[in-house]
Length: 177
Figure 1 (cartoon, helix red, strand yellow):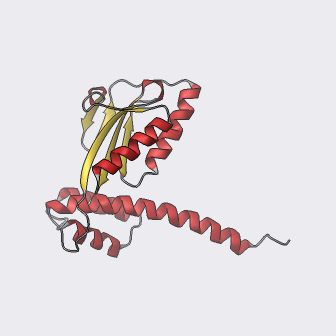
Figure 2: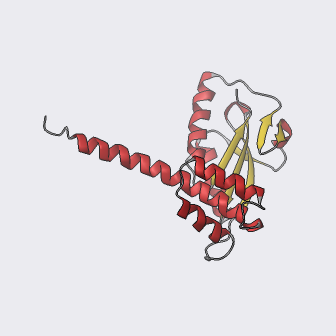
């Protein structure tokens, strides 16, 4: 039985869970900070209200939410965040819209280009992908779904995972089936 400590297994699982929670909370905090620029009261700022509700649904602690609101409102200093949208073509010609919140657009675009190039995808010009989507509320919906072969589907899945793990990327939309 040596080397089979139940506590060790629990500790390792908890560490992985904590890392994932931290990434989610970091992304949610950026959304809250960006939304709180329009006003720090969720009752008068619908974007902030939606961001706070999303954070509460993910069990984000209330003090983290308050800290993000104050930071976004300019009361606690910190870097200025701004939203950015990037368009790309992925494996098999899949159209991708990437929405990010960042404190440094140059760094973020370089990192996104690197991720895309590693997964057989490339950044596209602004407007070259959005024609394949329709904006309804906060969600982008594909007008023309694209079916992928097995090889492209595996590469696409790895690309989506890599993009989702990036701290600045908030939402990813594609027309892949």
